[in-house]
Amino acid sequence: MTNSTSSLPPTPPTADTAGRRRLVLAVVSAGLLLCGIDLTVLHAAVPSMSRELRPSSTELLWIIDVYSLTLAALLVTCGTLGDRIGRKRMVLSGFALFGLASAAAGLSESTPQLIAARMLLGAGAAMIMASTVAIIRVVFTDARERAVAIGVWTAAHSVGATIGPLVGGLVTERWGWGAAFLINVPVALVILVVGFLVIPESRTPRPRTWDLAGVALSATGLTVVVFALKRGGEHAGPDLLAALAAVTGAALLYAFVRRQRRSAEPLLDLSLFADRRFVTATLCVVGCFGSYVALLFFLTQWLQQVGGFAPVAAGLALIPLAAANAVGATTAPRVSARWGNRWSLTGALVLFAGAMALMALVGDTGAYPLLVAPLVAAGYGAGIVMTLGADSIMSAADPDRSGEAAAIQETSFELGAGLGVAVLGTLLTASYRLTMPDTPGLSGTDRDALTESFSSAEELAGRLEPPEAGRLLGAARAAYDHGFTTVAVCTSAALAATAALAAALLRPRPAAR
Image 1 (cartoon, rainbow, N blue to C red):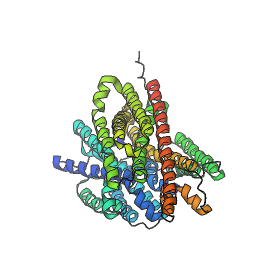
Image 2: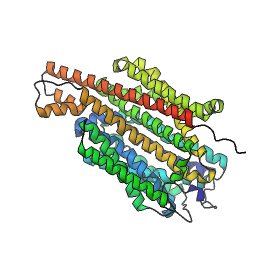
Image 3: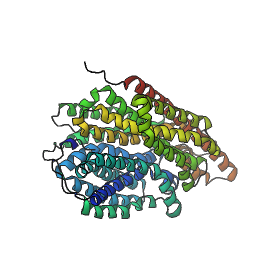
Image 4: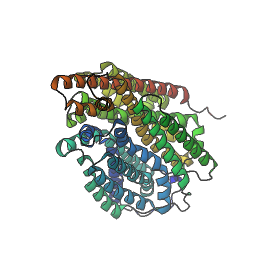
């Protein structure tokens, strides 16, 4: 995960018994499982949380994806900092922050408080994830054991992200949405204590410079660009502030790129992106994981808010998607052995795109049995792309630059998750707002609330007479259906375009003469 794992100390700290090595792996994998769960745990809790905190549609998107965006922005720099101060210290500090932020999120009484807590959760997750792969490389000196350990570590995050909606649905239905975060506190405390006892300390003898200015430029630029996207969707039309934010964010990111290119020790080695295979594999991962996480989010909302599913039922409805994703990830090596990474990635992206097109055609929560087949296809295709895309990123880089490639690989997953929800969420909000018909007899304030979000429409309907409330909710459900269909169609088109890129650009390097 960190960009300097290739310069690990030649003599690792003691991790002398197989039992202790397994304990270290259990600790770091449990940490990754928690980070993955927190990526999606709030999805099933959104309706009940929205009724209590009443966030706007834009604030709701910030609540969901500020976690992954913060994680993506801080991942590389936390790895560099961990190399300097010690990876054990960095990971344990991350667990402590993660537990405290989880308590703050679970006890939040306002939307800004919850957004701030989710941002701290992202920072804690970045501290955890940034140094765990380096710890594995130090503890597992045997190449075969290390490969198995990294496989377990990688699977933990994917499993966490996949079961997050089900976990969130179970605890929300029983104890309320805050419990989706509060369950992290005792788990993080146990991991912190065990990690303190078993994880050996390690650091790089000659760590890279920690570029605080580069961190500020990248994090601020990314935040401002996402703000511009959300602002544009909120107003669904020309907006001066959104345009200014987009230009400012782009300028900050451009300044970050220039600084990295001129730096002798960059946070992010951009020269890796000169390889078309590396760039294409990274785009495949960003597009696929972003679409997958966004699908988890929008499906849980669609099933609950339009279909009337309970939180647990919505989580259970995603089981075919989750199970197929796990099968896709485990069978990806065999698929690649038969067809090669290039055509396996292309075929899996086409399968995912086709599944999204089928969901758009069904477009009805009442016809859930018809959704099972496209859910299975989407999960299986996504599982193959995530596994082989990550492998292609690492294969495209030279072996002595595997640390930098690993950092970009993990960042691409988290950035994809954040941008997927941000971009597609903005699209759904804009589609809902534009499709919602005018309702005569409402005040200007009520009309604004009606077009703000489905939760606002439900709250408004609760204050109206039954016939009028029924008509209003029917219009809101139709608008949300249209928004989901729009998102599914656009996602299908984007995945198909990514498949075309993979087919055209993932050609193997020509053999050297």
